[in-house]
Length: 420
Image (cartoon, rainbow, N blue to C red):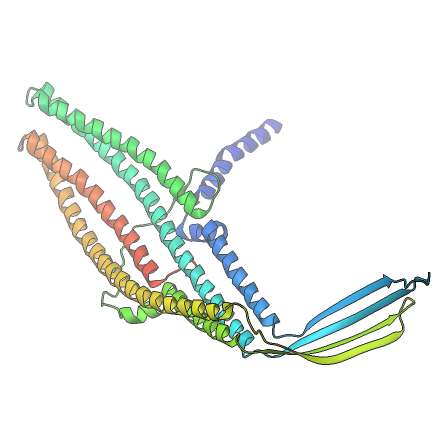
């Protein structure tokens, strides 16, 4: 019984552990998205940028609130000719409240809020770019995996063709050049199989980079080359452009620059504060003599060498630049949207055309192989048809992969993010 139990345990590890490991290495698109959302360094960096501007907004808001501080002191003094050194103790709490500053602080708060929105849209832009790169890497690896299957099938077919030609050559019905050509075709097919395997390793590393992994590991992806023609009516590009995170980022940057300009102008006004303090002082600890004060403070710069005028000029230049960037960005987004939509429509049509070519090439190859075996067509005619089938298979695969990448570019142009 113990021997049987040992055998069962060994078989369990032999068959279940590899299956589990294989399952971990097989990734679907949703798995890649989840991993990239957690690990991609560009997204981590963008999140921290968003966090910083949120903290800047908190800092801006804090300037509207009372500024409270406390102090505790102890001092010893001596007045000649007396030799006494009395101690003095004191503690107090001081508060200061901004009453008027020409609305500078409110403008700073609004500008900071616009910066937060801009940073959120900037994060979406980063997420959109990561999605495009991830989808491209995923598709490239899926294509290479499929290409390996295709080239392996081609190599097997080439091997069968060599056997057919060799039989005819040995029977004296085919010349040696045909046999050498068939063997060369087989060597080419074997090379393409080896090349596909090497390319898989390269595409694996590309996908691992986009996943945000730090170490290389052998992975495979699972998916299908589904072509969705969908609604092929031309969309409203102006409406799509308004919702793209890239353009929204530029709009919020412009709004932030506008309120920065208002804040710079408001800095010319005097600042009015109400102040108050409450504490105790005395020669013993704890001090018992109460001390308090209430008052006001007005701050108004008389001469600063023109720095505030320069700040206004600088803020005005930033606002003008932001408006120009928004207009340029809008034009670029509209062009990119139309270009990518046109390429997507072309990709859909090309897949349909290449599929028809593949169906025709398969039928021709099937007929030609039977005709060559019976001597109805020459080797030269047959090998042309065979080569056409090989090329059409690869072209059809490339067309489907190009469609998926073009679709990802269209989604990126519209501002689609990983969270979508």
